[in-house]
Amino acid sequence: MSYHLEGRLLEVCNCNVLCPCWIGEDPDNGTCDTIVAWRIDKGTIDGVDVGGNTIAAVAHVPGNILEGNWTAAIFVDDNASKAQEEALLKVYTGKAGGPIADLAALIGQVVSVERAPIRFTVNEGKGELEIGKDYYAELEPYRGATGGQTTLSDTVFSTVPGAPVFVGKAPTYRSKNPALGIDLDIKNHNALQSTFVFDA
Image: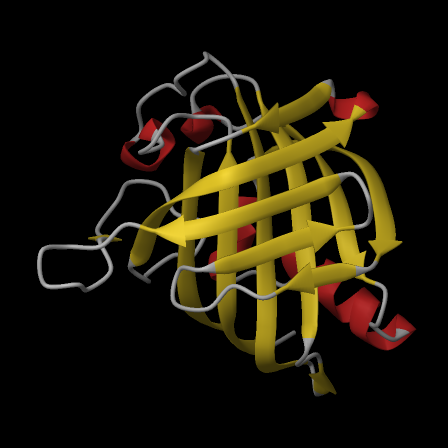
């Protein structure tokens, strides 16, 4: 099993800005309710072209992020073919090894795997994520004194291993999943965005 994936990440959660999980501290609320979405702009998995698809995890993190035991619902872009869906799930459930397997190992239980329309327009820290009708996030970046994006790197935890992350906030974040105990409609909480290149 081999893969090469390039694309963009959006992560939003109910922690304050900036989310302490990335430096290994406990989440602001004791637990963390998050959406992590990977937009694959181009890439292949075992020869299957998966470019143009998005895969996302809606997750409840019960404590310190590094201790794992997350519960998650996985969403695959409804534009994906069956072969693309199978390939993406192999990678994002950790079966294909590589950098994504370390992240997948933190998930203790997957409550559902669903197809859904996913709209991902985030570019350079600004944009929107929408998954079906129950999940929506808007993103704005923080900028430094010279106008560049504020970045976070060399963190103990990352959903894009090896890549710097752009720090932002979510003016709007809605997420509703009864199986995960998530029902959020909040403003101006943590959001992060990055680009990634994964090889295995």
